[in-house]
Length: 638
Image 1 (cartoon, one colour):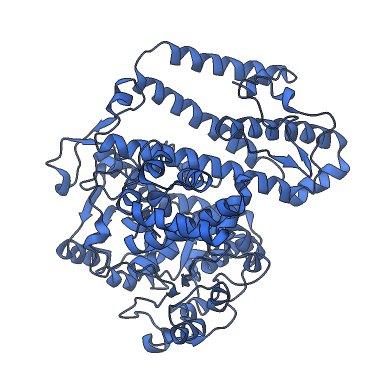
Image 2 (image 1 turned 120 degrees about the vertical axis):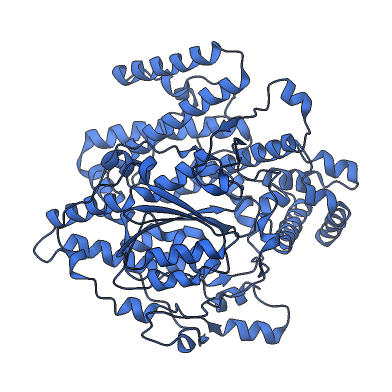
């Protein structure tokens, strides 16, 4: 609504105002809280999609700098947009945290101490002469981190509220329309689900889902240590298994190309500032040791800091030669309709063996993963989708977590193409959770980038090439849920069912646009190979100053005792999250952590009063320990 107050672009403004008024009228036309929330979510999602599409059409950073210097109309327009976007950002942040000011250089974006919550015209927020120069990228990124933190806080609040509703609490809030229960209905086409007639759509982190990691054969260990590959056999080996997993003295990891390094920057928290400027992917254990990161004993710490485990398939990836048919234009093979394609639920060893037998002779596989990290320190893989040209498979990686390494017979076969989309995270999850690696990979996201398509997301590729509209609401679903509702099954299948046809289209387009040496296709294959060379280095420990990033990004003004309490609780939260395999935000959300540090409660009543809307379960169980941490931190500061 605030955005549509600007009138200097008449056509765009009228269009946006019409859309906004239509949304408001629809929201006002119903008294049903569930319908209101659904309409609001739909309108917000549509706005985000339009914004992302517009952002993808903007020039790349290097081109932007050139245009700012050489094209005054462009520079003027971008300066106006910068004012508007930053003021909108300030207004948004101020609704949640009035004390946070987003600044340009040393000048606050707002003229007062905070942006008034009732400001309707964002131009009122702008002091005269305020502007962004083309080299203020670091300032913009720093402010964007604060926006991300605010959004994280809002999501934490939604999660906590949803958990309380699931436990039957906050009934008065539900009666007042503050909570919404949403049910979906469907009958699964899979035998495992045939008895299920109705399922509630699982929210991310649903409280009524039994934690599957409690049943894992190998207990999840979140202690700081280098990751040793899980391989028990190495099919298609050039270097034998024993030599491939032997610990080695620390050495620099292979440098990535600038394009892939930029794409991976920040992915999974794996790339440090040194990495982004030209180093490798893994944060070395030597660096971790300097931050106080590894073991409890000096001997173990020294031992861990001196070794790393190599990528077990690096020799095979370095020697990879692509089959000739992958490097030429070929006739595209259209997919069969989803409802006419066989789909198998693979959740036990018999079904796994049947799938492995059926995969013999296949030369192309489409693969995707569904992940959960709301109720786990690192997260874990919940589902693998695997499609051939004729069949879809849904593999339950919760029950078969330790049984899937036979898939390396296909995944590591250099003559079998594996097609994934945006696989930077999938590569890590496969090796860390399942002991699986990829040799001969084609990433459709990298192909979309090389072809400079309007969007690089899978949803765009599905719509563009297959006229399939992806229902992205299930991206935030709880994939631990069993049995899966029919809608989640359909969503999961769609991620791989069409992917081999999309690969056909992208490959042919790369061949057509490339030169005689097939340069574009080879660039995509090389980038994909570098993604497959990622390795999970293992967990590092909490660094002594990790809490300061949150302090800085929130613009928190702590006294010395408050900062001491904050740091101590930050470390306590991390330690408990590792032990219990819970996410730190589940143990103690950031906004509650900040409240406790600011108020420094001395008794249970005061501690619980800092936690809104409900006290986190693990905080309640360890409340006396938390109070002791607060007392000790306050005394150490004094």
